[in-house]
Image (cartoon, helix red, strand yellow):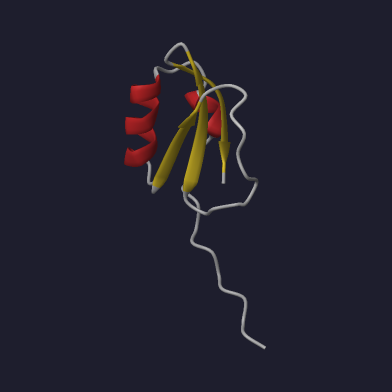
Length: 71
C-alpha cells in the first residue's frame, strides 16, 4: 500500500482578517503571506468541496471580501 503524502504546511494566517478588505488588497496580502492559490468567488457560486493545501478562498461582493476560508 502506498504511503499517505504529507500535505504542505499552511501559512500561519487568520482568514477573518481579510473580511472587509478590497478584493485586490486581500489578494496581494494573501500572496505576500505565502498562499499559493488565491480564489475569489461571487456569493452563491457553486464549488467543489475538496481541500487544497495552500489555497485561500474569498467570497467577494461589490469588490469587498465578505467571507474567507482556507482549502
